[in-house]
Length: 245
Image (cartoon, rainbow, N blue to C red; front, side, top):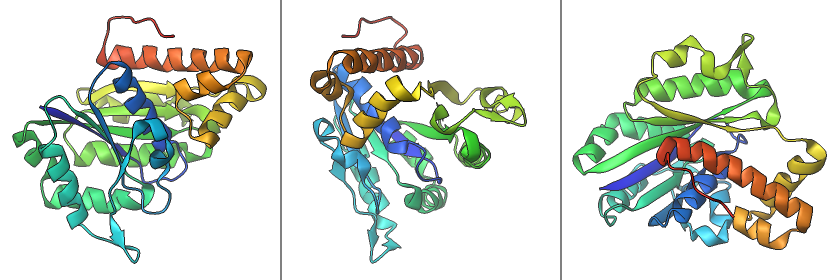
């Protein structure tokens, strides 16, 4: 069995590539076989994380999406070696074509029969983007039937809608059996943690690269950020606590 993790969100600039990179790094540290694929047609950010050795899958020609490119993605997934963890970053411009392809071709049913375990990563952004990203995540849950890992990005503001925490909204209770878990990217103090994370993201460094290259206190703060994220992912994928360097 191979494992496919697809990061989907129609709203741009909400941290999809960061989420994909986190997941790939986490699986690498578990000594799992990891394969990363970037399909973003305008800004293939995941490609810039050099240690992830990401491949690029071209989805469009002359700004026109080629649905047969998704056939290639299915072929890559179906022929991967057993227990390979494939992380796919779908850009915002590929969201609608991917969903249309998935529905038209009954994609998730096909992958199930090919012995591929699929998980969707959906990103909900706080602040001004919360309503739109919640709506899109709800649509993903409604139009698919595979486990979904929901990432909450508090960088742009509070993760609240109608004065309620996003995770407590009734609309998600309906899909509780399919929500694999919740991972939160917290809003950090701007002058310390926030600045260090922003620097790491601008450089397209992995956590380990940042820890190696930064000075003492920024390095310690990035280690703390990594430790918190890994602990959240452990609760989803590997309940046994692990030490993180």
